[in-house]
Length: 105
Image (cartoon, rainbow, N blue to C red):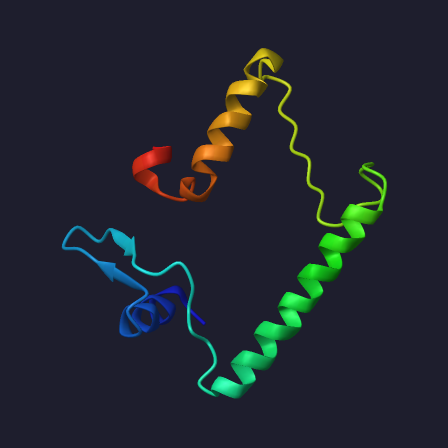
């Protein structure tokens, strides 16, 4: 799908809005993709079951990078290691808001 068609569709369902300057504002954190409520419930329950299995696997495995699922590491050689404690606090407090340009920008 080309970007213009996608933007029109996202505006139509109320997920985003455009202002006069062409800036896009996100209005939803998630999209309702299933019109069939029973299918949506089934998908949600299967996803939850898989998530719980992943959590159980991670709890039961040793805490090494190779054993756990969905373990991610990012490295930046320019980052001062002394700043890591402050970064961890910031992520814990504001991690859900990193997508917001007003906070990250």
